[in-house]
Amino acid sequence: METEVKILSQTLEIFKARGIKKVTMDEISSELGMSKRTIYELFRDRENLVYKTLEYGMLQEQKDLMAIISEASNVIEALYLIGKDGQMKRGRINVLFFEDIRKYYMAFFDNSPRGKDIRNFEITFALLERGIREGIFLDDLNLEVVNSFIQEMMNLVHNLEIIPDFMERERLIIHNIFLPYFRGISTQKGRELLEAYFTQQNQD
Image (cartoon, rainbow, N blue to C red; front, side, top):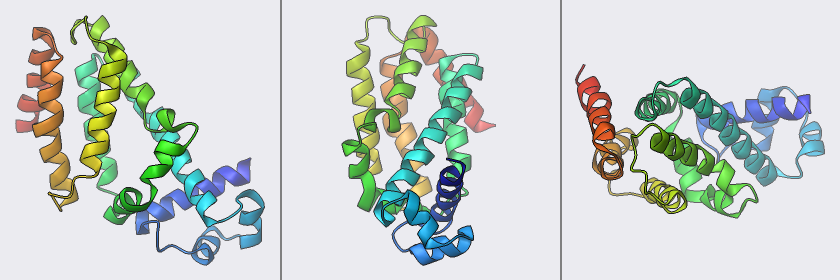
């Protein structure tokens, strides 16, 4: 298990630095300092390694997000901190990594037996539940419906090609799609917090 985790974590860093599609098994073997035979003893082929690496990366990200949520003082602060954390991490990752996922590997998240967990259905559901408890989101929301819709919005924006610049796309999506939607499901308290975190703080 220790060797498997080492392979997954280091392969993930290689993919983040250079993209996924063009990285060969020879390159992975060389950078990991181990033989391809050792890798193939744990992963049946390159595609299996890619899928396991993506799964590993998303589950690690889920742990990070859950930690942010648990430490935030309210659900809007959690959303704000999650956005900042994502922005910081994405700034360190080659855009080819995201483009390769979008072009070649999105089906994995739909077809995987753990697809909903990997795509962070649990994260968004936890945020919605907490927001209702805190009086930030409307208390008559159907959480299953809202959670599914948020995930579909995320799928949609990942596939948008009308904004070619990746980082600019993210900014426009947050302010033109996600913030208006969250205002719509928020109480007055929630709208005031959204204004405080996403408008006032962004002007600092």
